[in-house]
Image 1: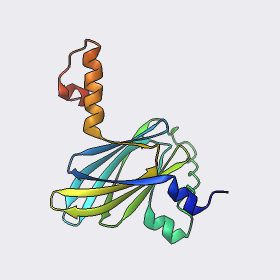
Image 2: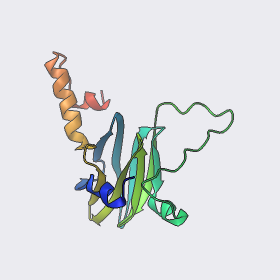
Image 3: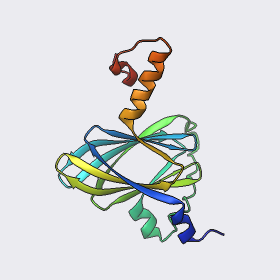
Image 4: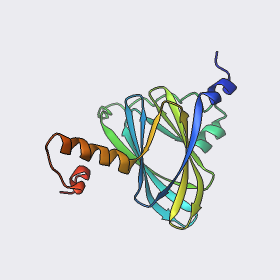
Length: 165
């Protein structure tokens, strides 16, 4: 059995500054998660998280209120009878204040997103995850994608990578 101390040793934390409209790209095993700073409104920031529908996103205060261990993901909700099969990606938009957290459960693992500081047009986002979770600024992922396409001989404009033709 793994103790909480051992679990914390296998995890690391990264803090990145982001402005409105900027994104982070997380890869947890094969799950791709995109976290965007949608709006910064004074002491609150709105994050939009795009992920596979199987990925669970839970506000930390709900886990704490329930008194459950955040390292154990909540049981997935059973789909309502007659509801469509939850395949594909969806986007969840949540407001957060300084010090508030979100738990993201993907591929039987947990990523913690916290709002470390909001100052003017910039928010500092803390990401705590296992060491092998890939965390990149989205502009680096998009640049690599553009470079790969151009190497294949398919010249494109930077806006094409984002679907802005």
